[in-house]
Length: 243
Image 1 (tube, rainbow, N blue to C red):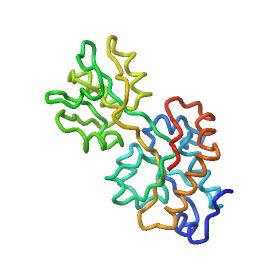
Image 2 (cartoon, helix red, strand yellow):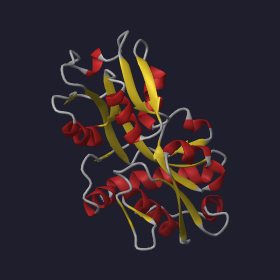
Image 3 (cartoon, helix red, strand yellow):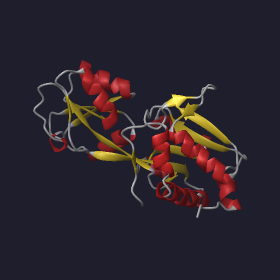
Image 4 (cartoon, one colour):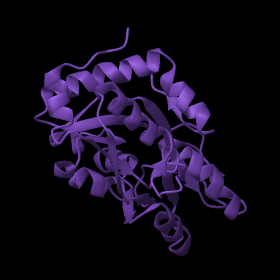
């Protein structure tokens, strides 16, 4: 049975009478196009629309150029569709993940690195999109290699190529595209993490956060998330397992 929001939930999640949904435009798997009016389209905007419909309020999409800006702007939105990360959870209450995106490495031609586990070694330099969910994960977990930060997906590729770095961290679907531009390069099997894309709300909104958690679990179990992935023809997204 669909989760029904209480009046307290609606008041928390739509205090202005409108659901303001923060959307990360740089996630090319979750935002796959634009409507004629310029609004973002894709799995993430559709999830926001489903939440607004459940709350019975209008939806206002608020696009941000990257996840770091979205996370920094928590005071401007009611729900934010973004990767769940401990650093972000200081201000944002996250639902369980609704989709996962595998993250791995691309290595240049002639590289002796054969596995994900071999990357975190002294002397290895890794190009990474700063403040992306996988970038935040690597900032916590890398012990020996050096992270070289770039401001964006394209910038991380250019940094990797121009500075002849040892590895490029990224989402597997994007790396599979990038590897075609560098003959002899390889995308490593396995993964160093799976980015957990979730729905967040400002941390003080406990009733709203509880509703979002229930809604996301229902959306996965009912097949809604799978249908949205199919609707937008996205490859590289997996429905997250039940929490």
